[in-house]
Image (cartoon, rainbow, N blue to C red; front, side, top):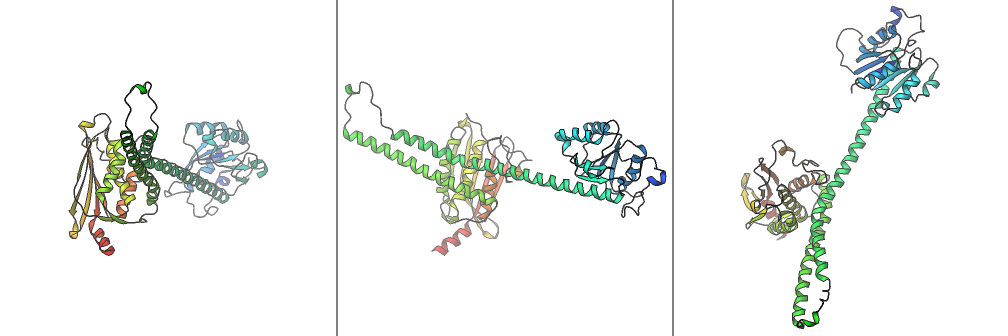
Length: 436
């Protein structure tokens, strides 16, 4: 951290005013062990602003602070110090004498504390009258004149270290709150997809169950037979039952989404069973359909593939995320000229291992090369505020890794994107054999 110290009014720092001489102003190496005042190029600790009305004191303090690794500048009084604070780089600590002409330490400190930008700079007060008066300005440390060089440097180091710790703690807390906010927004984003699907089916179910209001003049119309009314009721009940079944699927997906989010901190914890991947894809397509239908034609090429051992909620979320992302890469309103493809196949890898491959491609805008390396990072997103926080792909990536697989992406700007999920078939066969 770069330090700039405002050193205010230290005419009596190492002796009474009026007795300073060239020899008295010198600070020997024996007084400050381990500090080289001449020769060499120590690593700078930061910039130092010394505000002092006595020129001889300013000239004496320069070598001391420079020898301890500070880059030193000076001001002549409190007003000059404020001018520098407002026009130059901010200091990290202010060493402030309380008695100065033009503007004393109390007036300077009052103005400094009232400015939010300047008020965070720590202050070390210097007073010949003792710390009681220095306490009146709420300084971070107090030194009584005359001050020993070693005590001065040690005090500055301590104050700066405490300020650094406090700032670090502030940054940690800010980052923690930011991460929590991102996580909360991400949870909302991940739940919103199945929730929209669930709510749509509930609204339609309620409409189907509403009694048909009487039509004015209905007595003049032919009377519907009881058999026809019964058939209509049965058809409506069948439609409602189907939509409620879809609601159940959406509700389960919401419940499991919360568990899937925990994969970021607890990878590998899941319940696995024998899965029909094609059936799982069809469920994901059903849930993503409201996002797809106004943007692109959906082309399925779901060939016959072997079952695998896996977590249906986790892998279902993977396929849903890929379909939603593919849809969002395409603008609404031209569905006939855009397409999203989803296909399944089996490929052989190294050592003759077989992988079930699920491929999702789109004819959207594509992904910029500089973005590709960051796609699977938690909270990384290129979407507008409120449209996602980048949890979808990071969770999908972790879920696929948990299943011993991998996920790849190939994309060029203006030519869409292709995501491929590889899931090991051998592990599935072993699991099936054990159950048999």
